[in-house]
Image (cartoon, rainbow, N blue to C red; front, side, top):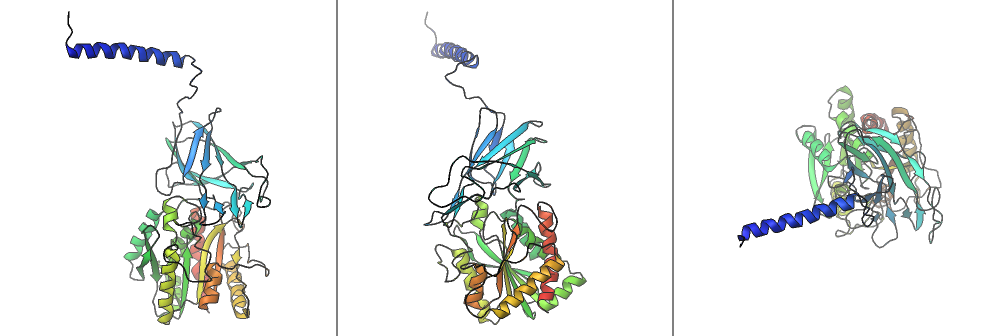
Length: 429
């Protein structure tokens, strides 16, 4: 008897399917040739500001994440401080995470930023974040070719555990501030008559670079702030949020401040790095806080080039800033004062005044760098030597706020930003 073609195919599928099912049953009952099991945990890195990371589940069921180094152009230097990813698992799941690749290289020397003070932040809704401690797992390898590693041998890793309180958990090195957060702030600013937003150019990948102005262009004094030259340093953006919030409140203090000075802000210099979840360099592998001793290359560092063009226009219009601060994050929290050759007596006196006012009106206690400290090539020194602008690099400790005796969250940096206008008011007296 001849079977119709459809029946023949159906019988074949049933026979094949039976064989497949049998094979699956055999494997699930102990086939040692394939020991890979489906994990109950998934790591998602495909969202805004998520960090590039390879990951696997080890034999103990732990997530092992290998972070991808951010590398400097034509240099051995590499950096990983940023991590940001989403854990997806059933509510109630106990999750253990090990992160590796913290063997940064800076100035040809290995330097792990991991320490017993290192933390991570956790959120189950991307709104409420909390800071939690980590365990540092020592590395087993000795440094080679670049001197000793700060804090021990190479191969140091971070371990932490938590329980899933929802199907999603967001993990990050610092409380994230993304381009979408900046866009929301810019939208709010655009509706305020005390402020203006101007596009001055584009990043390496074509994203817009904005300058925010708050206050009258004809104010007696002018202040310039730059944030997020290094992509992972979200503290600078939260601080800017706090400062803008206070200056636009239009209360009696804000009115008093804006009678004395006008503020110009480049809020996110390294937008490409922020978008891609990188740590330090722009899309071309360039450090935006270096080589300020000479004009920027428009192709390699357009972020600096367009800032320089804007600054030169301001100087030509007799609106040169009287003070400039480049806001960063590190594990120290100091005010970095440049000390180039030449007579800088007046500059150092002004920086002493700035430091004392920060101590008086904010939670800043770490202090300024020592007199032997040199900071060549940074925006702080470049603005001083090339343009005659008193400037400094203000680092915010992303691990621990000494003055508050706590690990920092966005609210702490916003509170700093709220208080900075008072600092600048007295600085310009």
